[in-house]
Image 1 (cartoon, one colour):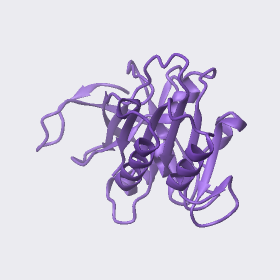
Image 2 (cartoon, rainbow, N blue to C red; image 1 turned 180 degrees about the horizontal axis):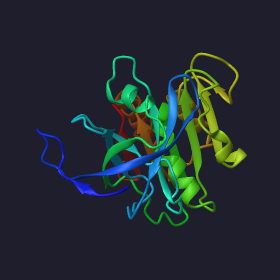
Image 3 (cartoon, rainbow, N blue to C red; image 1 turned 135 degrees about the vertical axis):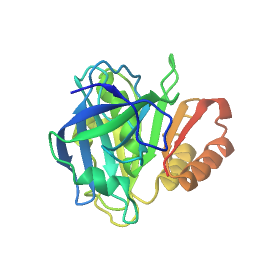
Image 4 (cartoon, rainbow, N blue to C red; image 1 turned 120 degrees about the vertical axis):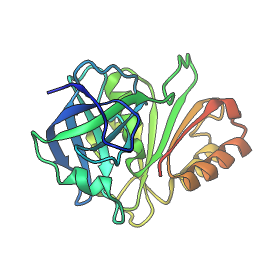
Length: 230
């Protein structure tokens, strides 16, 4: 079922009904919501606004799925004090959600021979999953930060030598520490090339900290792109 509808009272946007196809749980609090795509076109890195049917509340989520998939997926972290994430987690296949979009400009340019680095924390890995799944030949290093090693959201979907997992609260991943610590060390050692393009996605504190580390290491501001997750 797919149709443009008049939104609930109090909104001024046109949204669409989309039928939930599947919910795949990655951890107790993190899950992938899959729903109908219909005729929606998007570029990897864009996002959609999603909310439960019959509710005026919506939240923005980066598209997790590849451009060639016949469905749309988003990666969601249930927020303890949140509202929409709890509602979406309780959905079942066949339920309907409001979807608006896609939006955003956090997309990949033609980067030529420049190295490409994608640094994300938590569900901030979402746009990078779409980058990689949409283009299997993309030469990109993913640096993903979480608290625990079990929060390795679908790391099997990335080339083994193209993802670094940084964990701040255990030592069972590739690097023990935050992504900012990894970036600082890797730039000093030359593992990361300061001439490259850097995509940052996650909470604002991480983005500000990594941005400062990058620019202090000689990365030009025009080569840094950011998407803040709230």
